Image (cartoon, rainbow, N blue to C red; front, side, top):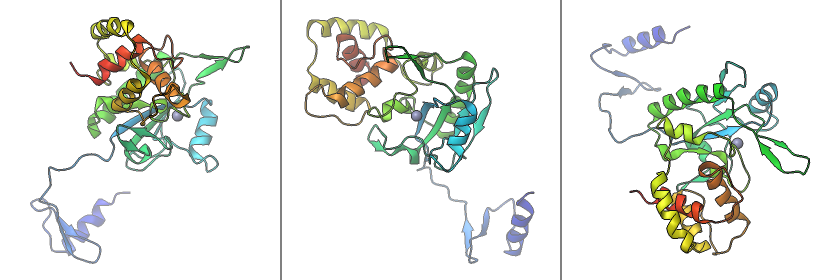
Length: 272
Ligand SMILES: [Zn+2]
């Protein structure tokens, strides 16, 4: 079924010649003239937020499409050997995936983002109750990257606006976790990555004197995280530092400020 014949008939009925002139009629009969297009516009989609589902494919589909949990995502990447990309919500509609999120001065990112869920357990709990985070199959990342490139290209999304759920909601979320291969996305030109030489030089300086907690709070906010205050290493500050570490220094993400974390943050926030 195509809407085109009906459109053509309506346009002809309105006395419009198709082809040379892009005029049609609005509901109510007033003419719509689309010949003057403003350059002052961009996509409503400003961010991409990446997630893992914890659940398997069948449960993920149920949760993300059914009425019970009131959550969804635009895309779901399956964990099949040859992954399938499920489009659960059209890109021009809002999906409900990022909650009371914040990034770079924008809040409630559902309205301005595309959400991508990856079918993945996230972690396994060890006998002592600690988590062992699990790696992502290469096939899923190989599926994600061209999808991301296409989204970025169509919507003009800036590299620093491709983020993890844990970065936009560090107090509640860990996904996509410390095993997500952010560096591979950086190698593909999709996201920024701090220059290793600059980090090493800056780290040597910070090893002599570690910045105060206030400095970390200010720099984390400047990087994009929700504002932190008080100058105290409280739970919100630790969780935010941990989110930064999960992405850029996944070998240790305990939320403790250290010279390497400070150096990474400094380089991310201070362009060369
Ligand atoms: Zn999530």
